[in-house]
Each structure stands twice: as C-alpha cells, then as structure tokens.
Length: 169
Image (cartoon, rainbow, N blue to C red; front, side, top):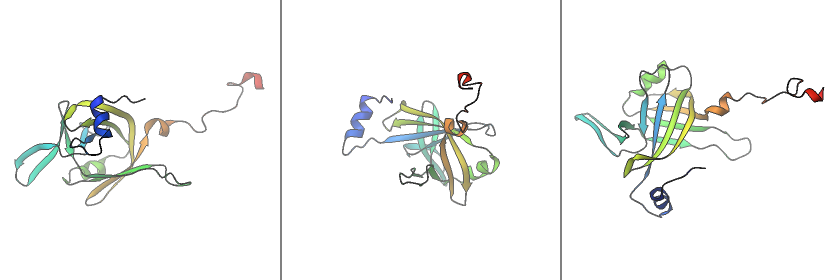
C-alpha cells in the first residue's frame, strides 16, 4: 500500500490546485556513463547560459531533472487490447536520440512522484520498470513500459514433476 503525505492527499482531493504532482524519471543502463534524469514539469530554469539553449526542469534531492514534454498511453482495458503502457518523449534538446542509438537492451527506470512546492520530498516511488522497444524519429523517443519482475518471471511459472510433487508420482 502506498502512503502519501497529508499535503499530497489534500492537493489531489482539491478540484483546483496551483500545486501539481511531478513525475521524476531516473534512467539507468550499463551503457550509460551516468543516469538520465527526466521531469514532467518545467518547474524552474536549470540552465540559461546561452539564449538559444534555455533548459527547464526540476531540482530534487540535489539532482537536476530535465523537463521533456511527454505523453503516456495507458494499457487498454478492452478484451484483447494492448497490455503495455507506451510513453512518447518530445526530445526538444535533441540529446537523447544519440543515446538511444547506442543502447541495445532495456533501460531500468525508477519513477518518483513529488509535489511542485516540495520537490525534495518524495511522495512515492515506483521502482523496477523497464523501457523496452525504444524507437525514435526526428522529434520523439517512444518506448514501452514494462514492470521488471513481469518480464523476468518464468512462464509457465512451474512444472508438475517429481522434484516439486514427490507424492504425486
């Protein structure tokens, strides 16, 4: 069960609020020199050293999460519909397409939820996700989101054999 702070519960229950929840993605992979940090909110200017390259993002617990607009397509509830969640990131900086070209296996992802007014307080964490089937074009990076334990779970889960059921043989 996920326990949320009183502030988070109050903000979620309001019909209107100036404080929004922010998703913070931490992407890790053996081929990456350092983790990639992505935010769903342009909370503040992170880098404005040049007028042509102003970067917005969220600072949380000493890390700078770069803002990238994104869309999520949730799994279908219809019979026979897709059971995968898909995410599309608008690569407005153009930096992540080069990284995607180098990665040939799933990327580990941890998702933290924070509130915009208290970005150092993590409300809840969703660990053990994988970005799989990563594709890209000139403007977007798309991927499927899979729970890591589901992808590594053996199928079928067990077998009916003398080692597991000695009394049955």
